[in-house]
Image 1 (cartoon, rainbow, N blue to C red):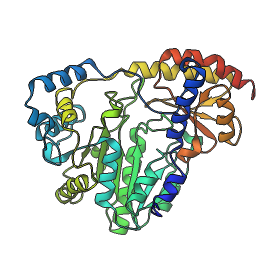
Image 2: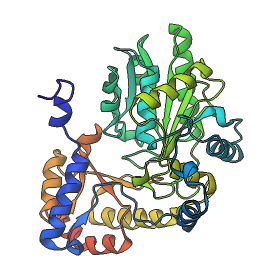
Image 3: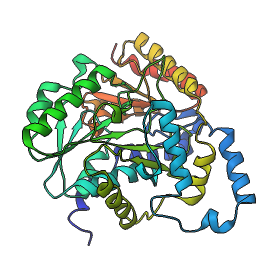
Image 4: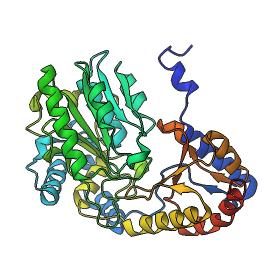
Length: 395
């Protein structure tokens, strides 16, 4: 019999993954070209050519013991230095390899961070709507999830009044995802400054440490000149989790990192504990081959313009049909208001037209749906007639 802790997770298995599996079945039934699956954030853009070239060269020419062997649980020092140097060049930070831990993607990074900082009963705040797994990650370490309700009237920016009320002496961290999944909004500098000031005020009020966890898999995917602030420059107790899944189109390779700045509270102790948390989580260390690839491809870039074009096409077409959407500033998601109050009813109706979207309640954002547009532009074009048929049911 499975554990009591796992039972609710099984009962509430990720709607996103379930929708993706449903899409696979429908593709076999109706033909892949006739199914419009916008459920999963699985990048359609190929990895930069430098990545494949690096893999070939490393496997061919580098000592196999280096390629496939053990290393420090924090990762190869050369890779960590390459990451630190890259961040310093781009954001004017002062990191070195001893601020970086290589991880098995951002999911692992967040779990390592939370395992390192949480005691049972500690509270972690998430700004709705938020990535569905945050709550599970927090509960993995017996933390308590505290949700700040969505704020559609102000472009899904944080509700600072509610946030201030819900920060308590038990608050250990706040997770922010910028650009945001699922809304596609970018939290601008003025919001980050205000957030940092509030957290600093509350730290002093309660005499506690409150961490700001910056979840950054979509950092490089910002459109039309939108600037994504680098949070360690605004708030000392920031811990960053990053993934190359989106920035280099490598979701299946599970490679990312943690940044622990020197100015953060107990930085050296936190770093050492996080390395142990990485090991005892079962990941042990990030994949050796991909660490070597990242070291060589640290300056490679994905085709942000591809995602921007997809998002613009969907936004223009759907709003012209009468749907209400948040104009995406980053990531690759379109956040659309359901034309009926129960968005699950709407996604069920969309499925009749072979359109797969994820209900917003999966992200603590009921009344909306998430459309993942990291698909081919051709799929988007083929889906427009079906969306028009769907729209006729409501407008």
